[in-house]
Amino acid sequence: MKMKIVNNYFFVVLLSILFMSCGDDTPATPETKVHLKFIPTFNGQPLSIDSVYTNSFGQQLRIENVQFYLSNIYAHNGADSTMLKQAFLFTLLEPKTLSLNVSPQTFSSLSFGVGVPGNLNKNVDPSQYANSNPLSVQGSNGMFWYWNTGYIFVKVEGRYELTGTPNAPLMDSYAYHLGDDPLYRVLHFNTGSVSLAEGDARTFNIEVAIDSVFNRPADPVDLSIDNLTHTTSNFPLAERITNNFVSAFHLQ
Image (cartoon, rainbow, N blue to C red; front, side, top):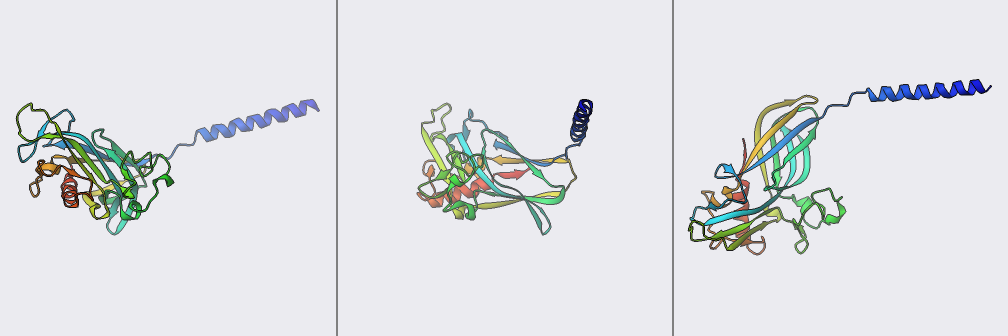
């Protein structure tokens, strides 16, 4: 009787080992990915916080902070669209590649919003989101206006001086904090036909030419007068800087 019990016990253990082995041998489904690599530049060269740049008015400036939201990132194939990501927050001086898990598909263009769309922007409590969400209190990293009940879409900050004298100290500061529903912009990029099978990956390099913020030919910025906006405090300037900023994105 005891021998039978022992044999049954070892039989159960053997079955468990066999089932575990089968489970370990099951291959994982390979991930299909789209990588969006954002490359910050100034006058075609890599952007650096240690560099002093010159604008269209001969004024010298340094870039100290650039942050912005991307939202509603879509892949498009004709009339069909697939959302790849709802929102993401970039600090451009710490360049990141946004890696997106996607289903196998074919698409011919990508689009995303710069900023936060109206349905997510106003009258929203950021504490409703998990800390890992870029729209949460922690995830927004200071990009939410409690006094204005909305998100800051874009921040561009730094220092400047007006004389253009080489090695002159940059004593004055500029700050562009842009965020209101009318400033939300959607950008579209033609990628050509892209077909992703299971396990495929594709990287898209997107240049962000920060010199466009200051030197866009259609609307150059004179830092002697255009150096501060928190949107409602100077909406015309906020709109100008927004238009300049979104012109900075180029699919390479």
